[in-house]
Amino acid sequence: MMRADAVRNRRLLMDAAAAEFAENGMDVSITRIATRAGIGKGTVFRHFDTKEQLLAEIFSDRLEELVTAGLRLAESDDPGAALFEFMTIGTEIQARDRSFCQAAAALSRSESAVHASRERPADVAETLVAKAQRAGAIRDDITGLDIVLLLSAASQAVLSISEDAPGLWQRYLALIFDSLRPQNAHPLPTAAPTRAQFTG
Image (cartoon, rainbow, N blue to C red; front, side):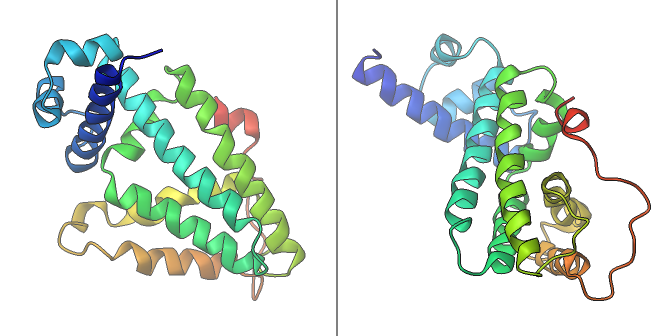
């Protein structure tokens, strides 16, 4: 069991690291994180062997935030609106955190915690998609993995100009929503990815 001061230092570290990674991306230094947390650099390495392990835990926390929201939304009486809110939350997390997509690409195969965490949003998305399809709110050829992969599309589309137009991702997310609705849908040219392809 961790001592009270160790618990406090870990919380300070996690909060500072999350803020630094979100603002500056993966390249931020451990020294800068420690300074923001008001702790020594050695304290960081008592909790995490590498910066990658620290980033992986923060990334997993972000995914758990999305999962928690998705589980709540799965109880909604409006499955279509619930799915779109889930996507909005997921996109907003990425829009406010510069390290999220970097971490997804860089850590998913090397850090076991990230590898495992990626499964949970996909599971929740499958549930939300199935309910939305039964309600006729989205097209029948969409899968939960499609939704998870689309979460980064709107935020990435405006990455180069997001500082000048911080809410612009909402425009492109609305366009994605329209593409998911069944009205005037056209057949998709290839099959959806498999879970094995997604997890690597």
